[in-house]
Length: 324
Image (tube, rainbow, N blue to C red; front, side, top):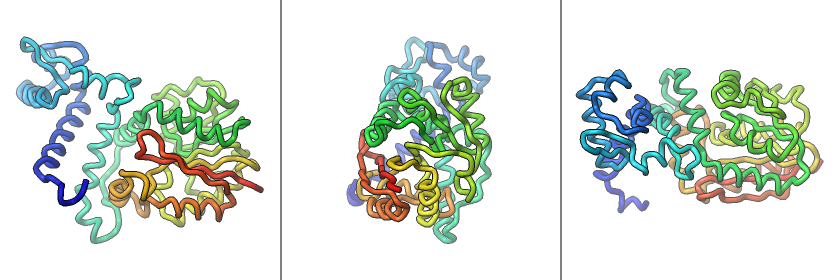
């Protein structure tokens, strides 16, 4: 949207609506409305204040997420698609609580602009769960598309590393195509992936706990045909990204693929604004151009670089082939 067309009143309205929706979702209101219910029933179910719940429900109706029939409320068909139907291509549900956390960090931007450092908001276990659930809400068709593109570059791939794989959505999808997938992430995230997102008993998946920013994280991992790095590069500085690729090269089989999913400046409509999110939440993160990714990959020993716009075009997949 061009600056001259920016409507402050409309933007303010949307911001308030997002906070309302996110708050209702976090309070459990959306799930409680899966079946039609009256206000008194909802108050008991949610252990909520009657006046507060009524005001929120009435405000959700004009937005089109809740419907009211004879003094009973229920999630609308649009609301179900967005918040209750995990298989719907428009599903957003579990990304909404994470959006509230993002808004908190953005409110610290005045100080961040002066210091260049993220704020000092205390992060809770619930915040981490919200973040991982937001990752898991990525549409499956986008995951399928990225996995297929990676496989096209290494058709005989047998072993995959899902680095910083969070809830394991990519790992599960790769597992349909290859013999073994290693999911590497921080200890708390691995526990969530196993116990909350149902990966614990999956055959063919190996869990490794660690910190991929550490110098020795590749030790004892073995080598891989495909190494996927999603939701990683935007959280790191350019120098950290260069170093990561240098380390990744050491565990990539000849002819193997380094695959990066991110918002690429100059191609993604999200890239510039997402960089602000990294400014508010990381020490040196940002979003980067195609030229930068090509430079880092080539310096690390990867060639035949390709870049694809993932549906609907907001994120990109960058891949390179390692030639020893």
